[in-house]
Length: 147
Image (cartoon, rainbow, N blue to C red; front, top):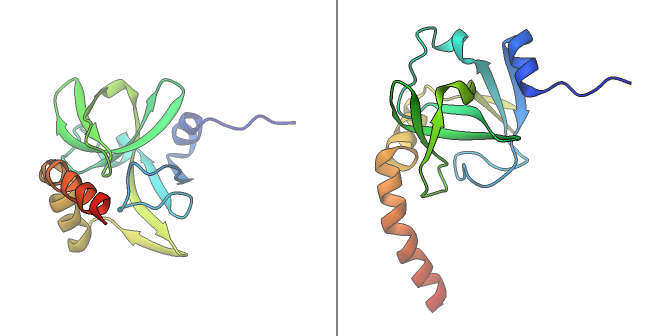
């Protein structure tokens, strides 16, 4: 019997990983248990080790694997948040395992370097999106409660 390989091991040896996501923190960009993401080892995508605002990274938090978006990069750490969250998290560079390069949805490969995805990143997923979510979500909650 063989043990399941860790995501780190797959990325280290293969350089690429296809992973079905679970959870709601990246909605509406990614759909839990429906979408798969292509993660590449960071040194293959960003040899200089510098991440950009909007990059979606796979990192390790304790024993959990998390896929969230870079809001701001510093030399030693990143400010990261899920597209469906309002909480920023400080992530040390050493915890980053890979960077998402594609999404597989309904059997189709969707590149994330296209204009629609970039616009989404600016208006919902990035720093501006974080501000919009903090303003809009309470209003939507009140409307929903009133109905």
